[in-house]
Structures are given as structure tokens and as C-alpha cells.
Image (tube, rainbow, N blue to C red; front, side):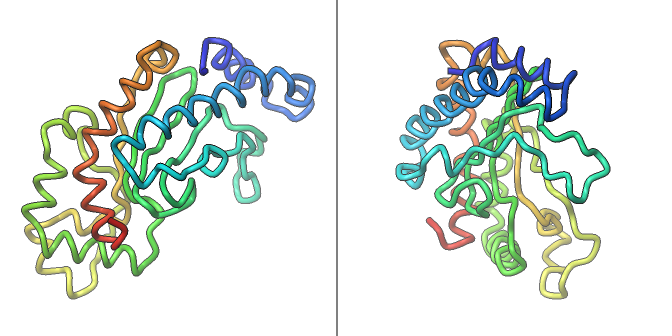
Length: 221
């Protein structure tokens, strides 16, 4: 699956981030990056299905992000990303369905998850469940395994809240969050080693209580 050649290519791409170089090395990209990453994501889905049964029908092609950057609204016009990534969930990579996010680059391997792409209605649903079940929420987000692997929740915060959440926010500051996600950084060696899927499973299990809480909030349990 993913190997040292994957990261060698990405390092060289950083120095030659232009279409002409990429096209000249496209077959090498497919052999060293695209195909190994697809193989890893396929194996990851199979392993994660033992923890998350809702992943059982997911296909790698629906989870893997393209290496091409969207430069339409960016000052940075370099055409390619310098990492490989996948968003594994029942709804695929751009879904608000709580899942597992994977990203790898020469600097490290990220394993994360949560609920990121939330519509206004979905955000209200998550906040409402946090307010209604504060003990369950605190138990999930402060679980020792979660803290050990992820530290804390990430996400942008609102400066002001709708009136219905203002009082609860005095005791549940997490309702200020607009996204509810988390990341664990691992060394590249954990991805290219024989134990990569074991590492992934361990980290994913640590996040399962909070992932289930978010799924239940979104009525997807």
C-alpha cells in the first residue's frame, strides 16, 4: 500500500508544483501515490467497518479527495495538493455524516473525524442534543482515550449564539462551536509500517463515543 515512494513523489511535487512536471510524471504518480492510497483507503474501510457498521457499503472512490487544488478563489495558484486525503463516512467525503478523516504527507499522518460540513439545521440539532444530554456529551469529549489521542475538540466558534442557547452556553461552552471535529497526528512510520491498520483502529475506537453522539444528534444512528 502506501510506501516511501509515495512520500518521495510528494516531496518532489512540492519542488515542481506545476502542470508540465505533473503530466510528465503522471504514470509515476498513479503507480506511487494514487493506487497505493486507494489500496490503503479500501483496506481502512474494511477494517473500520468492524467499528462503524455504517461504513460497510462505502467505496474508496467516494471518499478519496482529488490531488488537484481548487484555485478559483485562492491567491495560491499552485495546481496540486502536497498530501493525499480521504473522508470516510456513509455519505462520502463531502458529507456532514460523522466519519473518519485521513490525510498523509511527508510531514506526518493525520487521523481525525467528527462533523464538519454542517448545515444550519444540523448545527442546531447538535447543539440541542448537547444541551439536552450534557453528561453524555462531557463523558464522550473528555473520555481518557479521546483526550490521549486527540487532546481537544477543534472547530470555528460563533461569537454570538441564538437566544435559545445563550443560557446553556454558560455551562456548555461547546455550543459555540460551528464544527465538531478532532485530529490525531501520527508519524509517517505508522502509516507505511505493517501495523498501520492497527494504529488506525486504535485511534478510531478512541473517538467512537463522540462520533456516536454526533450521529445520534443528526438522527443517523
